[in-house]
Length: 178
View 1: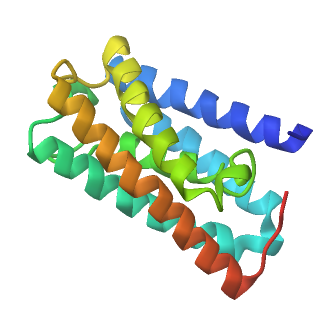
View 2 (view 1 turned 180 degrees about the horizontal axis):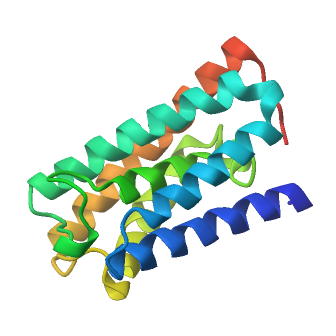
């Protein structure tokens, strides 16, 4: 992994910590501000490939909003009142999906063509991230095995799909193997 990919991965982790901790402390708007700034910097750095990066930001945000809203509506997850900004998936969660998408062509580039591995990675990593968020106090309701399985399946479907969409966009607009 080269220096830029390490920085990309670390910034994603920093964004996750800021978004989750600030939501847990009642400042759910703080994470999206940091992530918006990072996404803007990321687009500037990758300006030659903006037509690849920008669509995947929007698609990932939309998929994240739908996944988390469905998990919420089906009582697999819940958010404390202080971590919400509306009745469905909170903006800070959507921003995390966008932040995650900044890794697809960079620190997670190695997963782009490995859909089976991406399914496994997402099935394990998705629930772990939500469980960590629960321990911090930004999310609730992940005590049941059904919640863990629902989150895992949701991520196991969403992540490879986002990689597939990215691969299609790259075929149309070009590719940069960072």
